[in-house]
Length: 554
Ligand SMILES: *[C@@H]1O[C@H](CO)[C@@H](O)[C@H](O)[C@H]1NC(C)=O
Ligand SMILES: *[C@@H]1O[C@H](CO)[C@@H](O)[C@H](O)[C@H]1NC(C)=O
Ligand SMILES: [Ca+2]
Ligand SMILES: [Ca+2]
Image 1 (cartoon, rainbow, N blue to C red):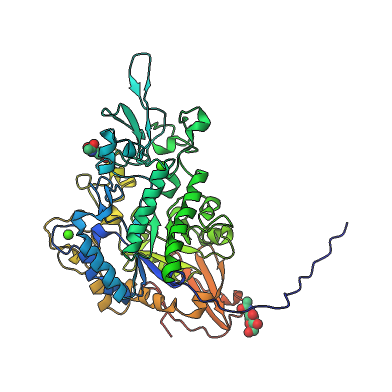
Image 2: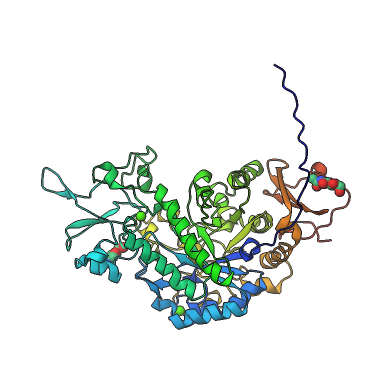
């Protein structure tokens, strides 16, 4: 049989219309880690008043929205990701009044505030958990309790082999009730029981509480861990997870097991769609779309499920972590292209991509890639089609701080019990104080000791200095943020190529305008023919160049 070429006729009515974009589709989201941004009262810990005092800075650099890591009442075993009171502000960070002032100031500056929602677990020092231990049935049912297993010697063991993300058993025994509770993260973070409708309703009320205060959405933490498998399907007993074969040397490590029963359960996606319904109720009232961002380090296929299921809507921004998980300073240009294409390839055609190169859980861009690639990565994040997310400090190229074993506070590092290799998993280095100027504690705080030490190199890697010189990461970032508002970056099409193993380039075009972004990943210089890109010929004008570039603008 002969195959005939197929001629595709263009559709008769081509509707070329640039759709009105929602606020979250064009903005830059700037992540603030409240503990490390600005300390207003000199106790060495960042706080809400500090954030309020610097909101103008966000405007200056072209940011229209910020998402704040948790600022809720917490005993801080996991620095705010262990929430004791979902309805209150953490005392070290300020008061509810401070939060309301923050919202008011943000509104004045037209900056949207997005909060971190940590639905998987609460705190072992919450009223809910304390009441549970006292046998208060309503709260007892908020958590996941199981009987231990007694061996032939009469020794009690945890109900099954599940390990916590931070290493060691995911079960903790409580004498008060004679049972173990589940904690997928640290001991101080008991998992909620989402098979209890009262928990589902309570957490929706948490969302409503903060939406009523004026927040514009939520970033949802550790979403993949929300549901555990339904034990009724396994004769009433939560089953062991199979061995992964990846970390056979360390049975206590999280990677020792294949997490088929504790992550990515179908019910989890449904819950995200239910939360979106809560947000949409608010949109119906005032017309403002609330944004949902989901945090899941997972396959592209599973990431896309957070967008919705075709009938129901879910998150507008399932975080796209390829720039964190898939590539680093050793990556070649084809590897960068391959990684960036991933989300674009899998995402539904009518959804937007988002670009994230850093956050409070991962080493900084300057350290993971190279200090010389700071501008290049910012170009990728801000100029690719979709939503840009910047972790505080990436605009000035902050590096990971050095935090000694003695100063280490991250439970992920402390749980290694390993004063030599702890830093490989420690998240303290990317959480060191924000660098405002070259004064004491980089202008973060007047305290004698800050909660984490200030990173080295802050004398040049700070906002004040970088504002004062013409070519700096900060000034390049600001120019990118302005360029990003051009129609070509909002509506334009996209094409990318690895011009050789070291040079990654992409083109954006729209209504006759073309921009090329060319990123050399290495020191080696090249002469390259950019007419490879269609319609690129003749004289090219340089609009923005990186700190490292020998070219001049014009
Ligand atoms: C809560 O858990 C932490 C460990 O994360 C532990 O140090 C602390 O003692 C626990 N608090 C109570 C009241 O059990
Ligand atoms: C190239 O330019 C022509 C003429 O302006 C235009 O019709 C065409 O769409 C452009 N192609 C691309 C891929 O930019
Ligand atoms: Ca403070
Ligand atoms: Ca859970």
